[in-house]
Length: 110
Image (cartoon, rainbow, N blue to C red):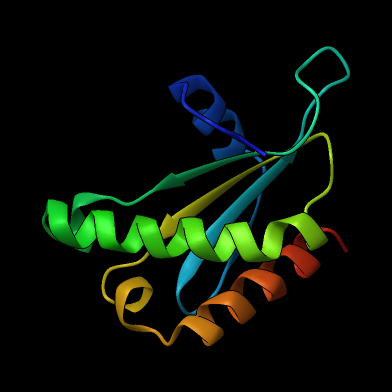
């Protein structure tokens, strides 16, 4: 998996499919044939999540959930952006966070 870093990639994903869950919002888009190969994923949390410590904690939890779930459910040629929610991302039990991500990915690919 590659990590999205360019703002333009995040904006392209924002215009594509999205699925909200209790602990996060997942955006996904199928890339064109002339773009990069493999699975690319990005993580973001707005200032609504809290201060820098709270945002970083939420992103760490999202990264770990993605590391465990994405190899099985992510499709090559797709970009994914995981967006943390205010208190839910940091406080939700980790197993439920993983289940939320699995649910979102299944719904996005239906």
